[in-house]
Image (cartoon, rainbow, N blue to C red; front, side, top):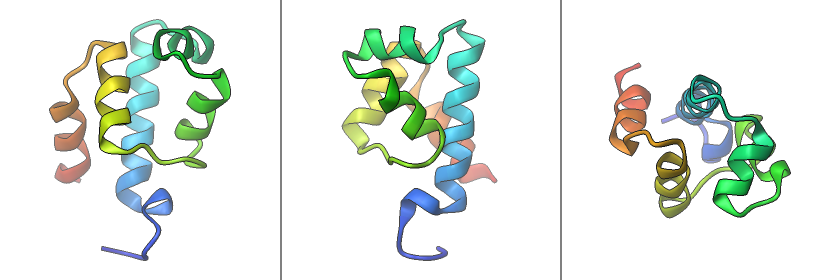
Length: 80
């Protein structure tokens, strides 16, 4: 595990890239996803640009809004 700040870790980068790809594949803009989550659209941008990390509950809700399995995202992060 490199460093102590998970917001800048390789694993967090892979997760953020995966979340962005899922959002785009589902046809969502940052604004449309933020409306589903009930957050400002800047929240999505900060997550995707690794300026903000998600806690586990936020991650699950993010995945639910995208209709993807959170376990798939974790497998993606852990497999690389």
